[in-house]
Length: 365
Image (cartoon, rainbow, N blue to C red; front, side, top):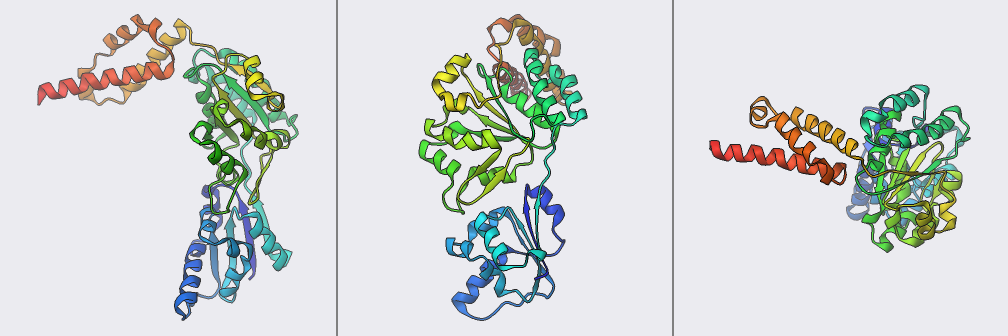
């Protein structure tokens, strides 16, 4: 063995690191299993490379994970280089115990953080992307500036976005992530049953899905914990260390969340309600509480214009002959007061356009 690279980060970047030709860990494990069950041997080409992806470790037993080097030993003479993406702590420790540190290289993906250009882009484009929440931009800019200047000293910035549904909370998180580059890392905590969420956050077997494993795979340093208010109450203490130190760990993985922006969303109406429901230990770990206001009539009209414009662009020339752009706009602006939020407006407009098109289609055919 000449080189072992332990890489922590997303698959997209890991693929740029590995050689063009290689054997996968899944293949090697399968061959070893066949040899053990039926005898015989599998010969690998000399000077080969072995690549293990994050998902590959799920295919090995607890015992094999704890004695991972035994897998490498089977084809040790043929394999020169090993590339492992997001290995478990058990695998890392086993490799460091057995192999010389001269051949082990540990690499961590460098996530985009707030740059001057990202800060300026956020300021310039916010109002076009997020309608009716200009005060939110004014509260977010100091946080982003602190990260840009390094005043946060690497500590995560923990934000609570609160207010009614469909007024821009999730879209703002997406916009921040887009400004920094990379797809937003989003977890909807309400999707988990109580015990499922605890297992996911605290970790169980190395083969099971876990928050730490997903965090290692993230492409962005913007993390959205959607519907944080609907998570199981006992799960909140899982976030104490990450909110304080930027470290999240379970029995299998450890993740450094330096300079991350962690956004929690909720439908609470006031900070007092948040504090009463979540409790002081988690409440006082938020750096900022940012309220998203209900949409004004002016904002609703602006959203109507924007949605109709975007939906109309998707139509082909024949469909545009059927859908009257100005008539549609006038119809929705006249009813703007009754609409609740962005999702409500978009849903109705899309359904209306599709209804017009299908009725025309049926008449023609």
